[in-house]
Image (tube, rainbow, N blue to C red; front, top):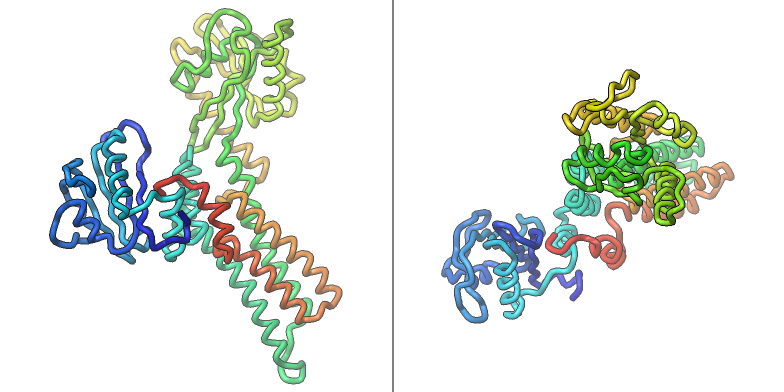
Length: 446
């Protein structure tokens, strides 16, 4: 099997495996109207872009396998640019696997490779490489902002910016190559100062995209919010209450949480990694000591710390270790304590204060991005960032060469190399490379 075998008919389960009301099977290839007729035992070609109820027959035994909703999308007006058949059958996995099995046994199709449907869409100019990556990223998104930023890329926001920069590179190269055909007595040549300024403008535009990488990384990984405090002050109860599930063990025994526990939470559209830590105290128990060491590491990694205590002493005990960190102080168990300080007061018994806590976390998230001057206009991935960074480094090196009065033919050649590198963002030449490094990491069925 090979991604470049685009003449093969391919099949895969497009929905997640497991129990569910329906499963969706996707087939892409050439002349699939005939296969549609065989599966449904109909005599007429299917009408494109219409979903209709059909009986599904095995191509091996001829027996009825299921009754489902089938649709047909004709080339080139389809997701992959080829004919597509989608079979909506009853869920649970067994029926879908039965259908896929008889399709493969009949030699009409083969199992799709990871991301092969998207690869065919890319090869048939239905999506560019950025859009293909963003479709896969949207599937794996865990927050509203991640989803929305991925959708912006699918709609072409990042691709448009990348192409504008590419056009600037090409225009500069055309000017220089055009001048190489004439001497200075025939046309007015652009001087080095003007060339340098154009390159500086391109560098600035590339920077405006690459500087979004810090924001992009945190959107994907989530900001780390650490629950910190002495044993038995109610950290785990607050943690569980925020999640709505019992992820941490709650007991009146000091040292119950012996290691950190992580869960994903969405607050204000942001992905939050909420961490419940081991209580920080001196311990002779080796396992507990390991948990405390882990807590110290998590303090260093945390973007926001929720410091929990029942009284002022519980809080001041951590003043040194949380110095220079973004800290939200929470006084716990206000159903049994009369907290008279100005800190946020919570109770898991009556849910008092939790709305204010979520607001404070969201404020902390916004402050984090603001303090770090995170630019959030574009969502970019590591591959794109590395190419942008490499191109800018090459352009900055080119500025030095221009100051040394480099020959224009050499300048043109170096710009060609930079342009080739830049093209790898959206239209790489090496198909094998993008298959191995990009599409092979996508999910099967997409």
